[in-house]
Image (cartoon, rainbow, N blue to C red; front, side, top):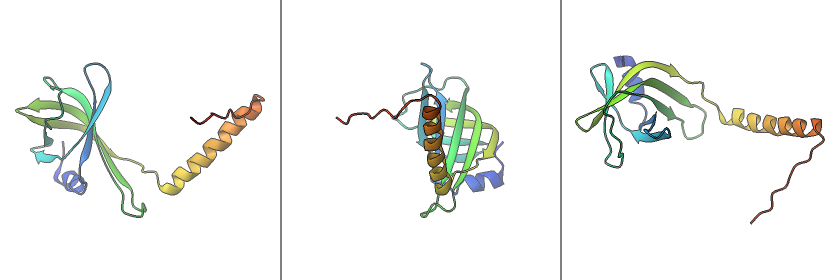
Length: 135
């Protein structure tokens, strides 16, 4: 159920990314703008989306945004089901969470730590970095 407060928060994002697994088992994502319809979200199905949602299918929608200097990242993840009705996609939310958004400083720290962990892995095995030739 998408209540008014949650929908007001969602409207603060330009669009959401709908993600699902296609009939061949591959992940697929498409950006959509949603409107509220009763207690669900609805979006116009883009003509470029050549996929028919003939029965309810598991899906998620993520809304993510940052300001210009990356100091206020924010994110909402909705999980539920999607079904197509008359050229529109109806998303029936089952749960949502406000994600922990990684800041730029945290990303930099993660990269530095990854390099240290990789070096430790190599050192423990007596291995060296393998340099890949550029083409």
